[in-house]
Length: 558
Image (cartoon, rainbow, N blue to C red; front, side):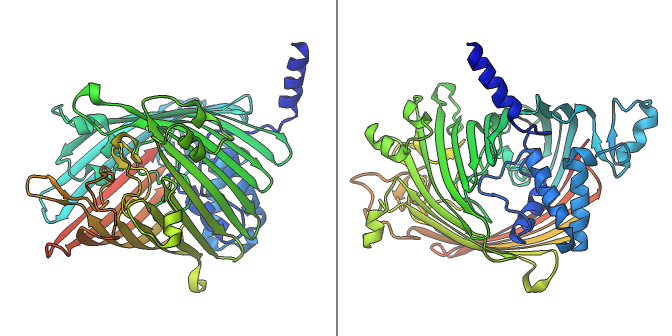
C-alpha cells in the first residue's frame, strides 16, 4: 500500500500545474478569435471537440502574443482584451474589478460597474487554487414583423455562476438562473433556443411564464508525460462534436445540455475522446410515460500539423438500461451493438479538416446512420441508405480584406437519417435533433460573412437556402405517406416504400437571411441585435409564407 501511495505522489508531483482547469463556455466570443487565428495558421485549434479549459485558452493567447507582428490592429486589440480575461498574470487592480472583497467600501466601489475593467462579483485565491463568483443577467426584447406585428415578447433572467480550480488540477463550474417572460411566448424559443427544452416553459401551467437553467461539472486534468494530456469531466455542460460551420451533423449543440462523463486524451498527433451521456425523451404530459435515454460517443483523430486532421467517430443511442459494452472506451461500439441483438441506434462518422493553406480551411463529413454504406457504394439507393454528407470552406481575410471571415457550406441528409424504428432511440433529446438543424430528407447551402469592426463590435450576415421533403398528412393529422422527412417517424416495414427518393413528399424550399451585430461598449456588457427574415415556399401546395422578426439581447456578467 505504501508503495502505491509513493508512486501516486511521484506521478502527481511530477505533473505540470495548471492555473485554471475549468472550461470556457462555448458561447464566449474568444472562440471566434481562436478559430480565426487557427485558420490564419497562428495556432492549431481543435474545434471538433471545442470545450477548452481556461489554461488552454491562455496558452493559445500566449502563442498568438509571440506572433503579434502578424496581426492586424483589431486582432491586437482583441488579443490584449482576452489576455486580461484569461491569463492570470495579466490581471491586476488596474484592469480588474471586484464588487466584494476589494478592500474598499461598497459605496466607494460602485464606480467599477461602468468601468472598462474585467468584472467579478467576488474572486479570491491564487493560480491553481481559487474561486470566481459572477452575477449573470439577460434581457431579451423581441418583435415580430411579419405576419403579425402585434406579437411582442420580453424576457428577463438572472443568476449566479461560481468557477475555479483546486489543487492545480481540479476545475469546477456551477451555474444557476431563473427568468420570467411577458407578452406572447411565440418569440421566446427563437431569441433563446433553450426555451424549447425548458420544462416550465413547455408545461405552461403557471400564470406568470417562467423558466430556469442550471449546469455544473467537475473536470480533472493532468499531463503525466510530456505532450500527453488526459482530462476526465463529469457533469452538465453545452458541448458539440465533429465538424460543421453552419451546423454539425454529429452533435450540433442545438439540443439540451447533456449530462455526461467525458474522457479526453491527447498525445502528440493523436486525439481520443469517449463520452457517456444521458438526456430525456419527448415532453409527455403523463409523468409515467417520460423516460431517460443514453448516448455513447467516441472519436479518434490524427492531427498532422500544417497538413490535415482526419477522424473516425461512432455514437450509440439506447434506452431502458445501462449497457456495459457502451461504457468500454476501447471497444468499437457498432460491432458491439450487433452482438447485443441489434436493437439500438448506431452511427458512424468520417471527417477531415485541412491545415496546409494559410487563411483557407476545408472540411468534410460523411455521416452513416445505422452502419448502412455498402448499398450506397453499389448504387442501390433505398430506405436503408441513411447517409448524410457535408463539405465546406472557411476563408479568413478573403481578397486580402483584414478582419473579414467568409464561410460556405453544403449539407445533404438523405431520408430517415437520425430516425429509428424505436422512437425512444431516435437521435433526439427532448424531441430536438441532436445532429444537423435541417433534419432528414433535406439539403442546405449556407453562407456567412463576419467582420470584426474592432475589439468592441462584430457584424455578421448569414444566408441559408434549404430544400425539404416533408411527410404527407391528411387534414386530421394522419400520416398518408412516409418519405423519411420526420425524425420522429422511422421506416415501417411492409408499409413504407423501400425506395426512398431524396426530397420526395411535400416539398418546401426556404430562404433564410439573418443579420446580427454584437456591440460591447464596455467590458462585461454585451448587446446583440438580430434580424431574421424567412420565406417558406411550399412547392407542392403552391403557396408562400413570410416570417420575420427582430430582437435585442443585453447580457451582463460581473
